[in-house]
Image (cartoon, rainbow, N blue to C red; front, side, top):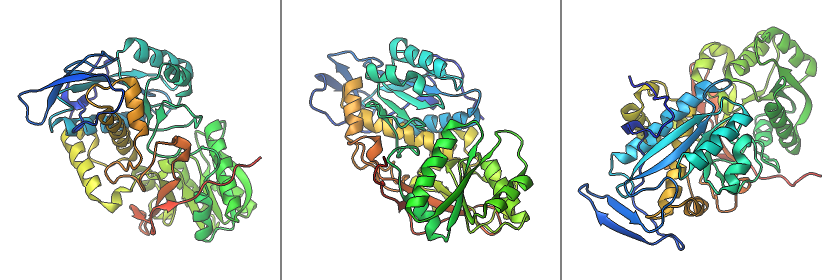
Length: 424
C-alpha cells in the first residue's frame, strides 16, 4: 500500500503525474513549435513565451488544502482522487509530452495561513494553476484573483464571485437561493420543517438559513432552527426538541455521524418524521453503519452521481483508483470522487488552453467549458461560461435502504430546482 508523500516540493513519482489527450488552440495563445517524441500520441512543445509552471517537458500545478485541524481526513481522500485522475491519463501518453507535477501546501484550516500558502505557490512555487480543498479559501482569494491564477476548488464555502475560481457544482450558499431542497421535501410530504446546524458554525448556520428560504418557497412551514454541538451529542435530548417543535421533516447541515444519530434518536423516541434530508457529507457508509436500520428511509443530496448507479464513468473511476491510489480504493468515497472531478475539470481547462498554456489561457479554457459533466459523473452538465452562480442547481438524491446497510438512488434523477427571485 502506497503512502502519500508529504513533502512540499514538486512530486516526481507517478502518483501525481497528470495529462490530457489532445489540444485545442485558442486565439491569443503564444506561438508554439512542436515535435513528435518517441512515445506514440505525444508531442513535446517548445513555447515562445515562458509561463509560470510550464516547461518543454512539464507543467507544475499547486494544491492548497486543509490537511490538519478540522476536515483533515477528507483532504487525504481528496488527494487520493487527485493522484488517480492524472495517473490514468498519463498512462495514455501525457499532455503533449509534458509531465505534470504538483506542489502542495497545508493551510491548517486557518485563513491567514491560507494566504501565506497561496502567496508562496503563486509567487514562488512556479505553478500554472491551483487546485484547492480548503475550509479557509478566503485567505488567499483576493491575492489569487489579483494575480490571475486559475483556481479550481473541490468545495466553495464562500460563493463570492471571483473571476478566477471554478468548481463543478453551484456553491451551496450561492445567492439567490435554489428551490430544489424545498421542492424535494414538499414532494415527499413534508409540511412543517426544522433546519439543523452546528453551534458556533457560521457556515452551517448560513446554509440552514438558505434552506429555510427554499422550504418556504415550496410551501413548507419552517418552524425553527435547531443546533447541535460540534462535539458530544445527546440524541435522546435532541429528539425531545424535535417533538416540541412539532416538525414532520428536517434538513440538516451537520456531520454524517450526527445526522444519523438524529434520525435514529427521533425514531427511538417515537417522533414521526416524514422526511429527513442530509447534506453532501451524509452520504457516508461508515457513519450509517453506526446506527444501521434505525436510519432507514433517511435521504441525502449529492452534487455528483451516486456510486450505486454503477455507470461506466464510475467503473472507470474505480479502476483508476485501484491502479493508482490503492490506499483509498477499498471503499468508494465522495471526497475521493470530488478530488477526481476537480482535477479533471482543471485538466480540461488546460487542454482547451492549447499547446502553450498560460494562466490567462487556462482561465479562458475553463470559461469555455459549456457542457462539462466529468465524463458522466455529474447529475447534469454544467456551463461555466457565465460564472459559478449561474450553474443549474441540480442534485441526485439517495435514500438509506430498509436494512440500513447502504443507499438506494432516488428517481427521477437528477432533481434540478430553479433559482428563486432575489429577496430584498
